[in-house]
Length: 511
Image (cartoon, rainbow, N blue to C red; front, side, top):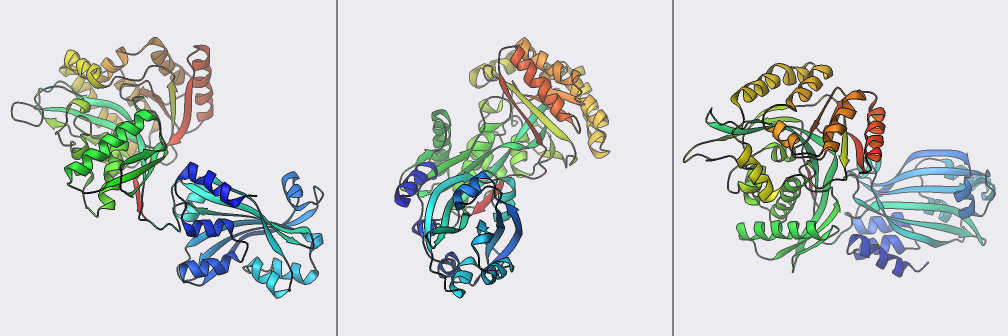
């Protein structure tokens, strides 16, 4: 293959590939020796899997053998001896019948580099590169390399040719954010469901107050590096514009010179009720602060970017994760807030204090069902709803508080799913949540009823929707099928996802 052309195509996907990465993708020599030269450290092999298996169709084609022929299947990590950092993950297939007994014995011994075996046996061989490509990191690869799920991996496949035939077929993978020659920050955020606002009456002298759950998926994954010009890639035009505005504002507010280049690796839709605006804004601000060695708290970043002016759930999800309740803002003349308004119309207002934070039970699962409908309320329309609908009845606020204190929180602490779920159901008909749901088309409220009937312990609408969430511990596939079938029957379409709560905040890595 034309490795130079393949690398150009990879760069179109992920951005600039460093010279060292190009060497690793294109070398026809010993990878372990090259890694020792790059790192200045001794490199060792750690064998994870070694077994004799029948060749499947793809392996047989690569090795030019018959399907079912025995091959040595080997998975190894190439690591530094000093600290065990995994540099490369490699998978190899070797046809047993092409090996001398001595070569086979050495190959089956753990932790010997293939290049070293070939050299010891004086085998004349060459490497022929077949493919070079970009792959998203799986959860398993994320744990292996200590990176985030969906970060790009660089991968190549090649054959070691001996006597005109493939002796070994190998695939090697390593993270894109390794072997770079520039400083880079990676930020991976959670998302959140917003169960309800607590007090939109204000008679107590406080207003707002939020209840929410941090989600493991979906999430925002982005990278940032210093750049002569401000650039945003890897996302749609609307997100590019939003990120560009946030980045320019943060640079200006902090008095920082220069610019940043931001690449979005993973995102989820805005204005569907999952808090993407807060997560994107905080991720961009955190990345810029880290690039300039500025130690800022998440509350400071939120204030810089105008987030958390009503609900503090998004800010706390970024910071801590878990189940969160915030204490709202002081209300009145000369106080933090003087009227009822959403976060988008509350710039300059600091995020509210977190008054409760608790881990969600590990065995509880959360279904998200997002019908393909116009996005939830935002901007001026959202502000109008707050102005027209508040204050809500004081009796509703009292009922919400009672539900949270005497049913929802005990449900989490005692791992009582039915109690917790029942409390979520009750909150959907109280206070400002009742207002939010009343603004939805029938398909949203009917979807809510559908997942409850299908067996959810509790279900609600997140923020202004249209995202619906349902809580359970078993039977989540049945809930998901019910939600999908309903959306198909209503001819609206939509997406579903079964995920878990996330009991930690954003992941930030400086490379």
